Length: 282
Image (tube, rainbow, N blue to C red):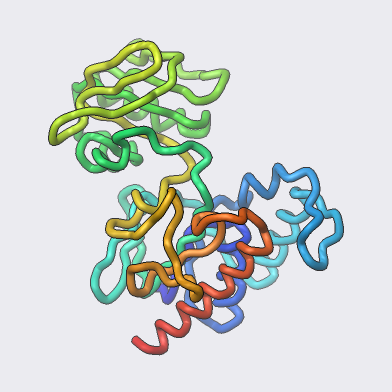
């Protein structure tokens, strides 16, 4: 059981991890070891105090070195769900569950916005996890919306289970070549159904399907955490980074504008102290 589970390796998540580690808390940090893609792609950062005209790669390298110097390891797993278990939280990564007394969401903003019907049918024909739910579609017809080539192994896994796979790649140079995988160059628009999703509307027509998999690097906080209050696509927090769920905090871009490194780092620090306060009271 961890004291705090931190979701995200951007400035907010790293700030929270550094603060909590300094105060001897038992933490687990989920995210990419290469840190935030948004940081690495920055040409030059001019408005962060103490760092004069540093490149994004330089900033990311400095953050990685600081994590390493404090023996903070990154758990390279994609979080697919966070569940309130009364006295603590369960963090789901595919089929594995990690338990923590508190959680800090620092997952940033989705690079790919949810399509209409995605959240409504989540768990009812819509899934983010191939290994979790793939077996439910043995011999069936599914659609897969894939955001990056790094998920092609999951597409191939699904093709071994399903009878037919309609693949919507959101990137170039697709390398998948399977007889039962049909690539469609169209924009997914809306997911429809009754109790379960059974139809995908796209820019060139529509498909009757048994299920839909969305394989992407980030999942909206509302989809990750049931009952989490959000507004305009951002997590609602108070000044202490509390969400509407006790023991669950949020920081960084996922809480709204401005999307600034300094703001994210500050909120990560505040969220860490709020988690410490919560732990001491419970």
